[in-house]
Amino acid sequence: MNKKITRSYSELVEAVLEEQPGAFEELIQKSHRLVRKIALPIVPSWAVDDAVQETYLLVYRKLHLLKDRNSFTSWASRIALNVCYQWQRKKRDTVELLPEHATESVDSTRVDVRRALAQLPKIGREVLILREFIGLSYEEIGRVVNAPLGTVKSRLSKARSRMKSLLEGSEEKVSRKHWATES
Image (tube, rainbow, N blue to C red):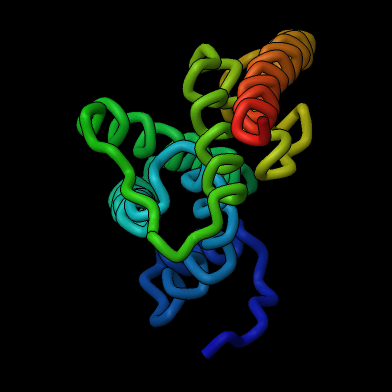
């Protein structure tokens, strides 16, 4: 069922709005990786599927409001970000339990990145996720966050710098912990 999607996003949006059979499934298949990549660094791994599903429910309900059919990816990215942040606000007290068979280094790295992302201001976290995890261009990010190009670049630079310092701080803690256990 993983057939190659040859229609563009704008063609698929039109097809969905015209209620062509299978068009929404094609749109989901074409954009699924994008939406999932947005959710992964924001919500716990066990909630990613729920966030993706909720995103597509909103996309389906609000697709008729999309003015520029060519900006579907920016529009869907904004919806996915909003769904993830809404999920975070609702589930603030929830703790992710990691599988027992997972290796400590992978889990601690994943937790460190998520923890560092969570400490960034919302707008910095958004531009960093959209650029580094999703791979959107600066112009596309500007459309998603509704900001000029210079502002996007500035926010991204600040977010990268802050993220680097947060992760370097966690590496220091890990290496200090490692040296303390070897003595």
